[in-house]
Amino acid sequence: MRDRGAGVLDGADFVVPVPLHGARRRQRGFNQAADLAVQIGLPVAPVLTRIRATAAQAHVPASRRHANVRGAFAVSRHATALKGTVVVLIDDVSTTGATLDACARTLLEVGVREVRALTAARAVTSRR
Image (cartoon, rainbow, N blue to C red):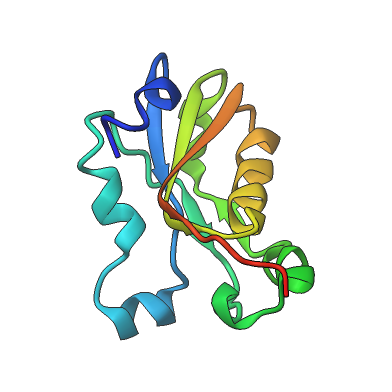
């Protein structure tokens, strides 16, 4: 990810992993986005929290994914340190971009100057 995403990472100040809800984190035992974020080589700022459990995006029709994650994220009080910075959201997979969009909006609301995204994979869907 670091090599392929060099253009996205260039000039960024922090990486921010997409959080799991606490219940899902306990069930899974790890947060894959956080594990990926520490490998990027930039300071990790775990300032996002998932404040409500959502259905797994993979189980939600594409047309409902934005609604599924709307209002699901908040920032910690430490997020003020990111005001005026460039951050890169880190996640494992992007399909519609709904989760990344919801996270980016939350970060921009607290004064982050620019939000970029880097994922390990991009899901490709075919039209039938």
